[in-house]
Image (cartoon, rainbow, N blue to C red; front, side, top):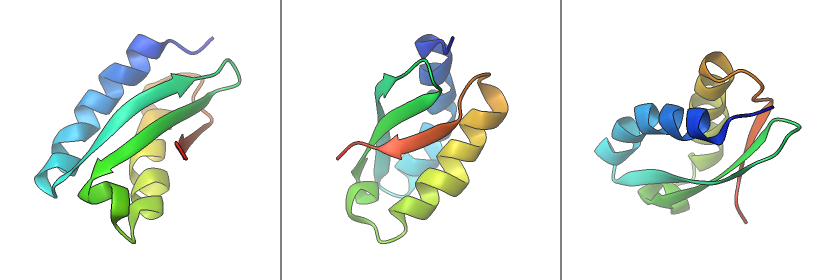
Length: 76
Protein backbone atom coordinates (compact mmCIF):
# COMPACT_ATOMS: atom_id res chain seq x y z
CA UNK A 1 0.00 0.00 0.00
CA UNK A 2 1.24 3.46 -0.90
CA UNK A 3 1.88 5.73 2.08
CA UNK A 4 0.73 9.27 1.39
CA UNK A 5 3.08 10.73 4.00
CA UNK A 6 6.04 9.15 2.18
CA UNK A 7 4.87 10.65 -1.10
CA UNK A 8 4.45 14.09 0.49
CA UNK A 9 7.92 13.88 2.06
CA UNK A 10 9.45 12.97 -1.32
CA UNK A 11 7.64 15.87 -2.98
CA UNK A 12 9.12 18.15 -0.33
CA UNK A 13 12.56 17.06 -1.56
CA UNK A 14 11.69 17.93 -5.19
CA UNK A 15 9.93 21.19 -4.38
CA UNK A 16 13.03 23.46 -3.98
CA UNK A 17 14.15 22.71 -7.54
CA UNK A 18 10.75 23.63 -8.89
CA UNK A 19 10.51 26.75 -6.74
CA UNK A 20 13.89 27.91 -8.01
CA UNK A 21 12.26 28.17 -11.46
CA UNK A 22 9.10 29.86 -10.17
CA UNK A 23 6.96 26.74 -9.95
CA UNK A 24 5.75 24.29 -7.36
CA UNK A 25 4.01 20.94 -6.95
CA UNK A 26 1.04 20.08 -4.77
CA UNK A 27 0.03 16.59 -3.68
CA UNK A 28 -3.54 15.75 -4.76
CA UNK A 29 -3.99 12.02 -4.18
CA UNK A 30 -2.47 8.56 -4.27
CA UNK A 31 -4.22 5.32 -5.14
CA UNK A 32 -3.55 1.77 -3.99
CA UNK A 33 -2.41 0.86 -7.52
CA UNK A 34 0.52 3.30 -7.20
CA UNK A 35 -0.78 6.26 -9.17
CA UNK A 36 0.11 9.61 -7.62
CA UNK A 37 -1.77 12.70 -8.76
CA UNK A 38 -0.12 16.08 -8.31
CA UNK A 39 -0.85 19.60 -9.45
CA UNK A 40 1.94 21.63 -10.99
CA UNK A 41 1.52 25.29 -10.07
CA UNK A 42 3.17 28.61 -10.74
CA UNK A 43 5.52 28.64 -13.72
CA UNK A 44 5.31 24.84 -13.87
CA UNK A 45 1.56 24.97 -14.43
CA UNK A 46 1.88 26.59 -17.84
CA UNK A 47 5.40 25.60 -18.87
CA UNK A 48 5.70 23.77 -22.19
CA UNK A 49 8.15 21.38 -20.50
CA UNK A 50 5.79 20.54 -17.63
CA UNK A 51 5.10 16.99 -18.85
CA UNK A 52 8.84 16.31 -19.10
CA UNK A 53 9.36 17.69 -15.59
CA UNK A 54 6.50 15.55 -14.33
CA UNK A 55 7.71 12.27 -15.89
CA UNK A 56 11.50 12.64 -16.01
CA UNK A 57 11.86 14.54 -12.77
CA UNK A 58 9.07 14.01 -10.28
CA UNK A 59 7.93 10.54 -11.36
CA UNK A 60 11.45 9.13 -11.60
CA UNK A 61 12.35 10.51 -8.17
CA UNK A 62 9.20 9.18 -6.52
CA UNK A 63 9.65 5.74 -8.09
CA UNK A 64 13.19 5.59 -6.67
CA UNK A 65 12.34 6.82 -3.19
CA UNK A 66 8.78 5.68 -2.42
CA UNK A 67 7.97 1.98 -2.67
CA UNK A 68 4.80 1.31 -4.63
CA UNK A 69 4.77 4.39 -6.88
CA UNK A 70 4.07 3.30 -10.46
CA UNK A 71 3.18 6.58 -12.14
CA UNK A 72 2.68 10.26 -11.50
CA UNK A 73 0.01 12.23 -13.31
CA UNK A 74 -0.93 15.89 -13.35
CA UNK A 75 -4.39 16.83 -12.07
CA UNK A 76 -6.64 18.07 -14.85
